[in-house]
Image (cartoon, rainbow, N blue to C red; front, side, top):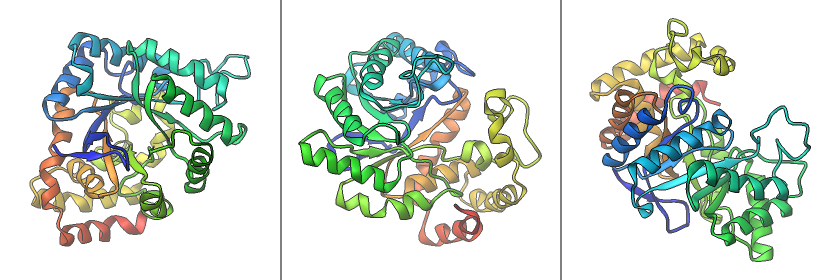
Length: 326
């Protein structure tokens, strides 16, 4: 496992990381989480991603209980969480959800720390942009959280390049802590934002990326070629909105064409897809997910595949997937 700097910061994160979206609490309880976290750190993973909204806070609780049981030195691992949607989706209070105002953010960090059982988190993200809150207010609040010691770095998730640059400029103007990372979706069928829209930000502001969904929510595993199998992510009631994309016949046909390429390299399509994301030098870390230990171990095989992704192999992959990429 190699380690990469998080953008222009001095923080080093493993090229593959482990996230908890969908799985923790919904599919993975504390004992299984503890087992997978232990296997991950043994393999060299040092970054674990979470969010306030995942399983309405239960994901943070599961991860926090696992951290407590494992009792690792705090310097050995990096933890993130994200704020925007809030926990109480049905709450009547105006500042409970879909916001990045100061009141919400200053209370959200305290809630996450309590659930995780930590004194601080390493990374905090604005989970989506909030056009209703002045950008200056959000930047000041995130900077103040950093200044308080409750988090070490802050960034954004699924913000446009213009929004990220505006936040950075506000921080520059008022000498505040600047956003250093973005968490965008990035996989073989979703490329434009990372490869084109953000292109100017990598060198000008030193933007780092903690990318999510390298397998397109499972599409790039090949298991959805014949429909949605029971027990899969797509079969979860809470993930029903993914079903149409997962069963897209054109993209599944493309996934089938990737199988012989992966086989020639001694890998699965999933390992090929994860390695492809990690091959991009602009990516600081690729957030992977797993609902069991075997899946995690299989995903880790992508590391060994990286040296095999030669320009010729990458060209073959592009021939199959680039015409369908957004």
